[in-house]
Length: 201
Image (cartoon, rainbow, N blue to C red):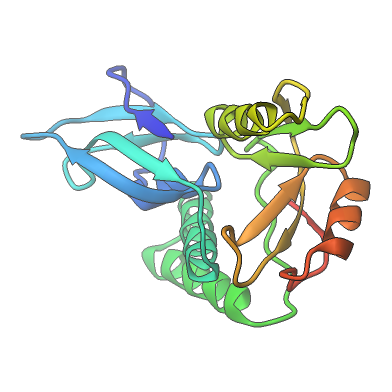
């Protein structure tokens, strides 16, 4: 996912590039640095954020977290971003991030929820046996296209406020998110890599 900063002014806290990606439930992948004292803005699912000289993000590239450590990094960055949005002190922002990572790394602890404003893009196969939800429409469309190419007709990706997910271990992805609670429970029961119950995000 590529989050390109726009040229117009916007009010809001200054978030790091990591926090900008985390606001959409994603992990920072890469950032093209701008020269000089660029001051621009980009709108995320959480807030309108500013990118100035210290973040220097002209183009911020985000991707989905693929390991448990990366999932926890996203949770840490999201918590610190939310603390900034609510006007907390630097010490409180740091503590919020540390607490979120600690909670994420402890086994059998519920994963903090992504705000409803950060929509998911979801699709389900026509036979109702498979599905997926991703934080970006492009990501959702890519997975859907892959299923279609393998003969699995699927519904168009549609936005929804929440998804139902479970964590995986020793798998290609760290977390599988689905459109409904029922489908999550169904697939969770048959996946040997599942290491958590279904939870709402």
